[in-house]
Length: 425
Image (cartoon, rainbow, N blue to C red; front, side, top):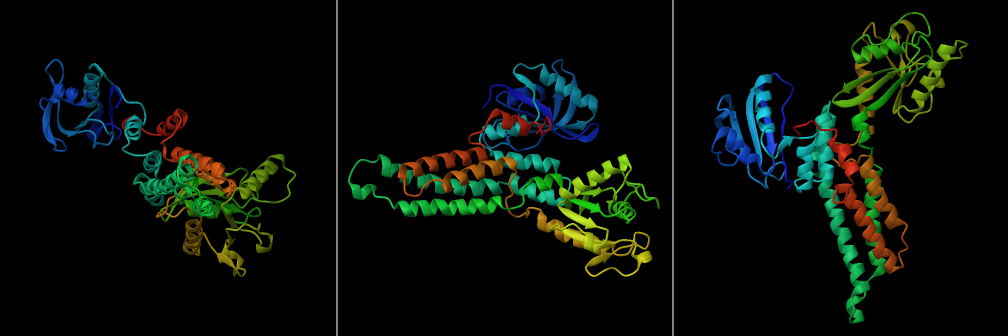
């Protein structure tokens, strides 16, 4: 435990029906006693009158006490459930700030203490950060898997296997005694480590977790006046892009974040692709081409024969009410007649679902992929016929896994992560 005790408002913006103020640390219980008198039994809510140092009543509030080490932070923890008025909360925070050894928490410090005290690991803390930022159902479910320890349990199983392999290798090197006792099947050791590498490569090949945060990038492209902006507005559900009969109306990228059947996507409208002598229009076309290169899914509204060859694309025959039947393989749509939009959304949903990490399996973010990739490279590049090199490779791979879960971590990594949290988390 750390020596100082922290406090913060942990609920939402004020005013509100209820405000929750949390305290964590060695002096949390003593501070609560000064405000509310004798404390209730752990995990039993008690209605108390909170009094300031001058004896005046601050508020009537529910008080909850959680005894260490089975708390969210691993330390003694107190919660005050107050009326959510600004003046009420401000007065309680002022009383806490005047007490010796208490200070306001920094962003994410409650969760950081949970990590330090072993209540969760770094992958679970990252899952909590993702859960706080979740905007769609897919993001929420994936974050709950991480926060609930899905990845932690998987990595711990890998770690146990590595520890066993490393122990066998070290015993064969260091044990002095009968040769029969220290004999080791080096080929078998190498094959077992190779099996771990195959498992890791499979995880690394899964869609990255960043797709959940950034959203699958869907780019609408095609020649001028092909109906891109009208379709963009229809999918977004508002008039975000300017629509006119004049070709070349869209000069820049227009982006919108969408919740597509619970899945996060970023929709991008682009300038029409064609040869132009207009300098500003050429800039817009260049940006459209760059957006095409970065697209996860392409909605092509031009001639199917001119469609870029992307793995994930849908051919769209826009303005079908005016242009007639759609070419083979194209989805006929009409914004005016409301035709084909449901089919387009359904087809888009199928493609987005195939690109996103499955919510029921662990997905790795960039930091986690780097650590696991290092472990896989170390073992796969080590000769299988040299016991000393194998033993060293196993030690290094174990260190990489420990960086993944936070057993070994730098302050920079922790500062970057917990800076994403609010004060009371």
